Amino acid sequence: MLKITHLQLFPLCFSLCAVAAFADTVYLENDAEMKGVVVEEYDDRVVISTYEGEKNILKKDIHAISYDLTEQNLVALGDVYAARDKYRKAYFYYEKAVKINPKYKTARDKMNFITGQIFRESQTEKQDAMRRRQEIENSSKTLPSKKEDFKKELEQKIGIVITEEDNSVKIIDVTGDSSAYDAGLQPGDTLISVWGRFTNYMSKERVSRLLLESLGEIKIDIQRDVVLEKESPTAGFHKDIIGGKLDMLRDGLTLVDLKEGSPGQKAGLSKGDLIIAINGASTRYMPLADAEKIIGNKKTGAVKFTIRRDATIWRK
Image 1 (cartoon, helix red, strand yellow):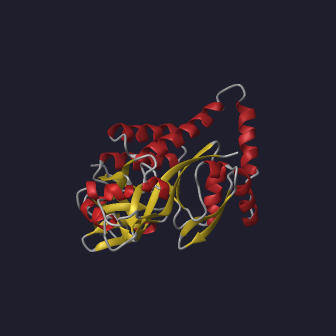
Image 2: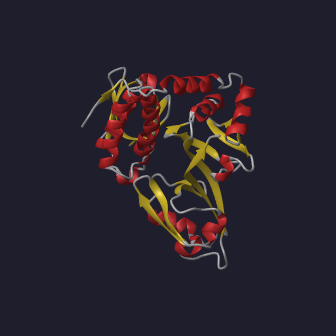
Image 3: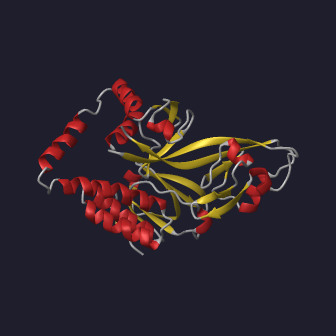
């Protein structure tokens, strides 16, 4: 098991359903240790699940984190090198993580992002390096410095307006005929991450800069509530109510199949959606059978799914 010290970590999010309890260790600056499962990581804190419940620990109080899973440790090593702009080293560790677990979305997103960084870096070794570097420098210099300028740039280049709400960033408007509209974003969506980096506890200006500094494609994750009105009869098997199949995968409760023209599709669900809550109840520690019972409850005529979905925006 690897131990990564003095990390500048990017966020990860894993369900406990496929990870043994007490798999990870957080080493605190006061020499204490906390064992459990790290279920979320943000810029300034981690959330660790223990027998005593979930605990928030600020990163300034953390000396190191040791993960039970090899691929998580590899991503953490890659993050250290990425923070130092050593992109090829970072790519090496992200790629190893993906080879161990091809379904590890965080590792894939970071590997793809670093690929773009390496490409830009390699351009400086070619004859037109100075010209390309100047273009990038000019582009970064045009990034807005005032709050009102960020709003204007996001509308023009991506097609969204965002606001801060309850320590998260929410999309309050999407411009028609924009890259955000083409990516399926909607007003009311919560922006969860940019290139695998959680945006919770970030200011909307910082999130705006992350979006605007990305050249070409931008990989994001959004969260959305989808309400499915049950067709008559209101009670039934969950597969019939949704018109698809749920399964508990490593990342959590996932819609692994959805029929064309099904009630779930009409309501706004998509194959591959991660279901993080049903009728307000978190699915993080929920057995699959319990999720199925909530959906098939005879007393309810509608089901509210809180889903997370990845999307790709092409910046103008």
